[in-house]
Amino acid sequence: MSRYIPCYDKKVRAMSLLLTMGIWAHRKHKQRADFRKGIIKAHGYEYYLRYRTWNRIKDRRKYETVEAWHRRLALYGFDENGNELNKDVRKTPTKERISMTKDNSVFNTLYEYLSEQPRDVQTIRQHKWFRAYANEGNVYICNSTKSPACKISKTRVLSKAETDDIYALYKQGKSISDGQRLTFNASYWFALFSAFHM
Image (cartoon, rainbow, N blue to C red):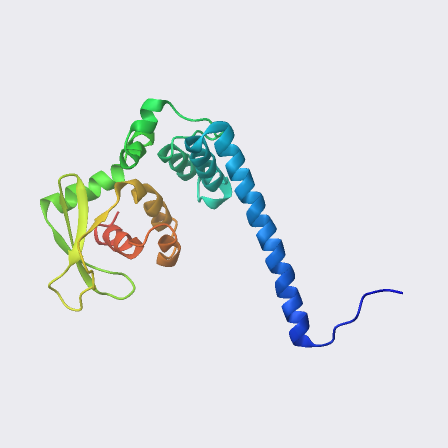
């Protein structure tokens, strides 16, 4: 005679399902933890960190273009096959590695414009003003004196490393929402490109 007893009570069935899912999640967590410990024990913690980074960025399908994927790999010191780049490249600060893979002509043009004359720029969607200026190799944005103004709590630096990727989205006619998946400052980037007719 079977020991299985049908359960028709929804609450009991739900609790049983949650318990089963909890046991499954615990087993998966334990498997990942054991796998992590095994790698660290065999190769060291630094190797594990490199392994984890490679698994996070290796998928080509996450990037708009092959060039964007290659630049991303170069930032973390990998080639497209997962091999580590020269140690001298890896020691280079992350923000400077991008310049080793491609000339940032878009950023340089924008920097020259803002170096000559800081400018109040209006965002595309909400038509709010912000102040943009360049100094010591960086492009900065802050609150404008014009109204209505963007609410920028403190001065921000627009990263040189993300210039080419965000500009590619702008030239492809992508929306600001698409750009915000790449950077929080997408609306300011798009406004600058539009203001200077780039």
